[in-house]
Image (cartoon, rainbow, N blue to C red; front, side, top):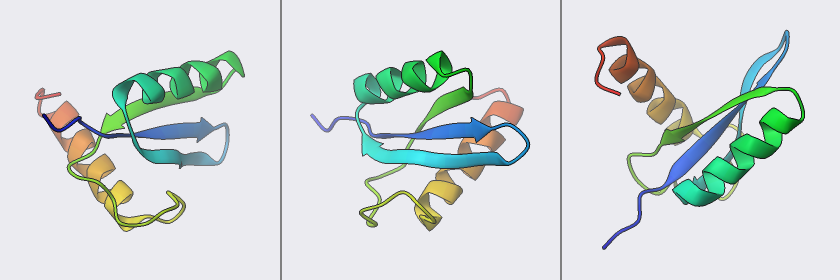
Length: 79
């Protein structure tokens, strides 16, 4: 069985968000979100549609596409 992968969005006050990491398991994403929140920032884990090709999450176009897809699903009440 293929494990679902996640990316983590890290919100920086006054600057917006960045993708802190991608291609990680749900358990690792939850731990990363908890760590970010303990530092007083907002964060959320977003499911990925597939493993992203880029090694680093910085400027990853697949991350941006998955975030747009997830946000649309939230707006439509599907996530």
